[in-house]
Amino acid sequence: MASYDNVPHADFPIPYKTIEETNSHLIEKPTQEHDALIATLPLQPFIKRPFTFTHPFRLYKGVWISEFLLRGALTMQQHFKSRPTDLFLASSPKSGTTWLKALIFATLTRNNYPLDQHPLRTHNPHQCLPHLEREFANGRSQIIEVIPSPRVMSTHLPYSLLSESIINSGCQIVYVWRDPKDVLVSLWFFVQKIMGGADKVATFDQFYDLFCQGVHSQGPIWNHVLGYWEESKRRSEKVLFLKYEHILQEPVKHAKQLAHFIGCPYTEAEENNGVVEQVVELCSIKMLKDLDVNKGGNRGTSDGPISHAYYFRKGEAGDWKSHMTQEMAERLDAIIGDKFKGSGLQI
Ligand code: PAP
Image (tube, rainbow, N blue to C red; front, side):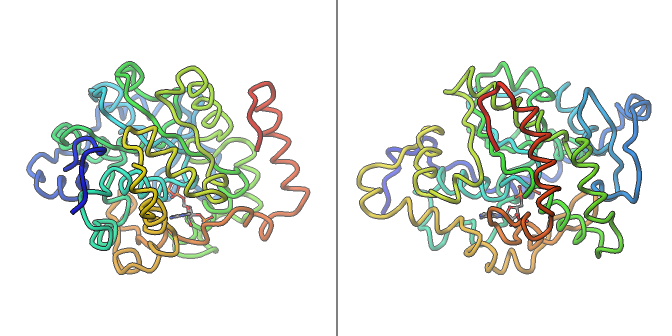
């Protein structure tokens, strides 16, 4: 049997879905307390609702965010009490959230279950870790409250919109970002699936133009990335800054770095026994995509049920080359390169 010595709080986290199901009596009516304020905020330029599914975007403090998630974010900012032991996965949408949810969850729980019976084989990664502002928007704030420590949660909010409580609690944040050109392509395919076809959404060129203006979920992406980058430079022991493409290139190295950062490094014995490779394999898109839960299940959201399969497409670097002209790529790179100037960051 595995040893729990190097994994703190060996029994936790357990999949969020289990906590949600056993505490369903704590679910409240979704909040409307910020609706009056939200109604005064600038609305996104409409073509067809290309990025927003059923909820339009509003511009709040320089961030384009769906009305629905903004409701959750504002309620969260007011009421959420972060604990020093909390761990957050932060990301701009379509930057590697599902993958990192799996990797973090598997890393923390690798000794709680035999890996061939691990909950990731029966749960989509989004059922394992809650998305904080979405849960607040959905009346689940009290469920978040009863999750035993150490809690592991995700957020798509930029650093500038995190609550004071999160920033001041001393909790850790893992941030993942991705080449924005691939983020854009991934978003476009995702929205088509949600909306039921290419004819239901804006054209790729329209998507691209809005993206270049920063009008997309939690955009502009350059501010999102820079916010966490700056914070990771200031507090490297609290904010780990990862890039999707780098993890793809060297998954084992990054899995070890992640484990070290979150306080459960692999032992020499684990490394010698190939446990890092097994965790990486369990979390790979090839493995997750083929599981029944991810082929057939779905996730209830404010936009209706979203098939788990929509979270797994190609999982590659550079798919933008099949969808963007060289000129489009250079223009977007130039916009982002300009914003990154002086930061030390490069695409
Ligand atoms: P989210 O923000 O809605 O949760 P997110 O998981 O960040 O989405 O992004 C989805 C992308 O990650 C998809 O990329 P693609 O469209 O370019 O293919 C998806 O395929 C990819 N992805 C999902 N799981 C994995 C994984 N285990 N390894 C690598 N990439 C993955």
